[in-house]
Image (tube, rainbow, N blue to C red):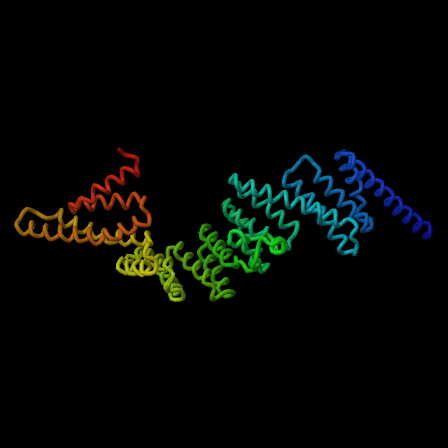
Length: 424
């Protein structure tokens, strides 16, 4: 009795294998003839017996499944994912079994899908559909997880699409993977133009050098993206009202890169966004101490000092920035604005005066003080116009000042203002 049972069992296995082979063969023929519906039905019939199949048949099944999904008129993300995952299963099965019969076809299928995903994601970005672009790029990452750049760009698009929860998940996955985003950058000097040209790969760069069109081949490393990722995580938390989480994220990043100037700057920016200007000022002063010849840092310190109510300190920072960069128009405008802000108190006192002899004398004193303020502000406004001659507000302010000072330059400013604003 036992012998009969064993024979019957093997006969059943043989029947399953034969039936599955027929189903897969039918799917292959239907796919070749373009009958995707029949091919899909045949694969569905084979799927029920897949557990009993050998590795070779499983790999063939998933290859056909990927090919049918790829050939479908349905080009939705779900269908692309179905095809990509089927192709990936082929490679997984054959890697485990030591075979490679179908892997080349599967890898080509994956590459075609990835290329299509990138093209569609670029189109989505241009159309402002960042969330859709993020979904496609994340699928590109899932098809080849060693290419973490897809995950990075998926996260960036999720941020731009204001899908902050998804972006946060992607960024945290990048951190868990230890992603830095440092890449080799291949360049060579163009012999004809003398310009340094970038190349997409080492092979293309080396070919151009061999062809004689380029010389001085070089390879450099791009900057790490870790500081940017940490910044974006902190900003997401701030947007979500999770200030403590934002600070913790920044602290964790600092432990890994304690001397990274970009990360120090992002920490300062984070406290600025949180409204903690005192902490921002403290951090910025440390950053400036490490890079004292950076006019932008000094300018930012001036802005924060002004917001903290210390206009004298702000002017000091702006003037230091101008020592390094004399044509820094934004610093010049801000200094002029601080100087002219003193006019408010003078006007209030002048308006409060009566008609006594003492009041008239005081009025004349205050009027002179106002004119002195104007004269002090003029060089900064004129300096700003030298680098940005179309600054309408600077021209309008100068025009008003010159009228107050009875300076004939007022008419010149009036003409410039009319020209810029299209007046007669």
